[in-house]
Image (tube, rainbow, N blue to C red):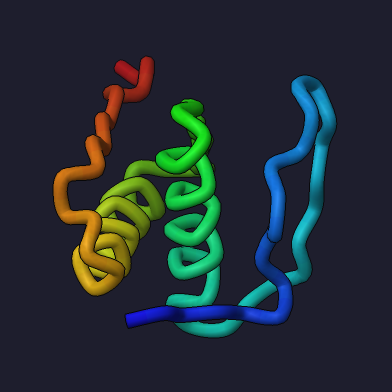
Length: 86
């Protein structure tokens, strides 16, 4: 199964390069990040995603995991680090 958004990357940016994608509706952001994760898997790279709050972390983790499973990559590792709030 293949998914493609018009806003997704076809190649990874060079180290240090900052990219910005337009706002996406629904789970579009999770799909775009899952597609970027697939590029990283192919190139044996690591993808770091920083979220604004823990609710966004939980939503993206769940949705990215779902998209990766649909793309036949359920073994992709997703690690969530706790925030520093006390």
